[in-house]
Length: 277
Image (tube, rainbow, N blue to C red; front, top):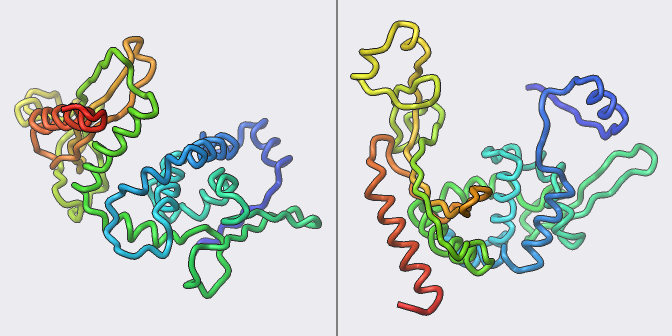
């Protein structure tokens, strides 16, 4: 087992950056993340998302808003691994946004080391808590959530929340976008397919492969994937967009029928939320 120890030493880190000696840079700063979550908590947006989340459980020893917040924090840091949660929660800004009643940092005056103390939400832990919730709680709840219900939650409740926040332009420009979601080459990814892709991650048919030169064929690789359809709302200037609907499909499933279903669902959902038929 490899043991990695982190020490808070800002002068050393600054010197290393000046010399160009770094392997990885985290884009989400703790200050920006703290302000982001303070905005979400202050406007009750996390509670609104959690209220309609399709939880697979009847009883919750940890509130759903903590689960939603933790998932958002992981995505802000570009992580899909629940094992990274303890590190991210310590280094990110969610901890400060939660407030001292949930978690607090304490700095040792002599050593400068930072210790994290979390009150938790139940009495089920035997050891002191160093994170607001356990990474295994996040993993099990995510695994138990029904995928179709999760998509429906996003396509309806999250999309309607965007509307109430004024995220949609009056002109109403929507774009359908098809893409591939690559996953590790593991057959346990149900419904995924192994397809041949060129160097630009474009799928290659058998006919196209036969027309390739040996050099072009060498640059291709087999990758396991799903297909996905996104319904995007954007402004005319093309400066921003919002994902208002999505469908994750089998690797060989056609994109057009799910896209039209998304358009219909978004249209009827918007009408329902405004009280019009």
